[in-house]
Amino acid sequence: MTIHLRPPIALLLLGAIAAGTALAGAQAPELPDRVPLDMSVWYRRDYARCNGAGRVTKGGDSITIQADHSALKYWQAPTLIGPLPINERWGWIRRCDRPPGAFAAEVRKQDAQTLIRIADYPYITWRWRIEGTVDDSRTANSAGKILSAGDDFAAKIGFQMLPRDGDDLREIAYVWTRSIPEGTTLVQEAGALFWHFSFYRIVAESGDEHVGEWRTETRNLLEEYRRIWPDEEPGELMRVFLMTDGDNTGTIATATYADIVLHRTRPERLDTDR
Image 1 (cartoon, rainbow, N blue to C red):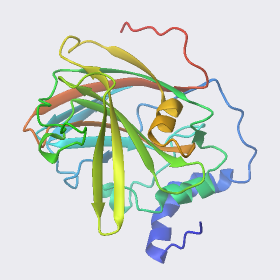
Image 2 (cartoon, helix red, strand yellow):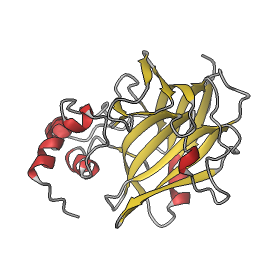
Image 3 (cartoon, one colour):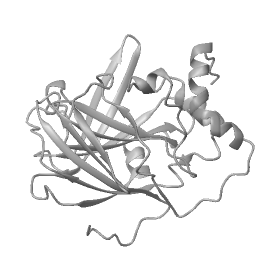
């Protein structure tokens, strides 16, 4: 598939792929056993042009998001050698907007050797802690389709990937719910005109029993990708995002995320104490 960019979009992406241009002809880095994410580098996306009520606190290895009747999301584009540099002067960053449509395809072209392939790093681990769950009585219907009236989660960590042979993003996110059982897969559908997209949410934690405690999660992202899209294989990981929101349910929600790591093999033992 050939991407033809209009000049403004091409210029827009220069800041995002500046480092990748120099790396494109370099030798591919040796694959480490694990890739920890830099928890200090995040870009804001809050659906209110940077005016969403709430705050974020960044620590050495954690980030705390408090959403006050708002929806706050922070994201990064991880690579084998660290987060992809993004030019923070561009308009979509200053407006806390989503990346332009050609972002993923262009990053794949410029940074192919340093991007993280899901097949190489199928396992993900992370730690999170919430201050309270969000009412999920109206989150989804009986078919598992997410409803706009209840589309809020105290904690959500998402992974956006490209198919191995395609340029249309796939998204799987893990959420902490109040009463929806662990292991439930929910789907959020969005679209306009001829464009349609499905976002999948998997319940990784449920209930109030562990509110205020650090919880460690281990998931096989490759396995879950194949379960949701059985006719294709995943390619590169393009973005990781963290989101805490309470705009639809009128809730104040707080979550802290830490120690997000991608692994080549399943971790045998994890320390859950903090």
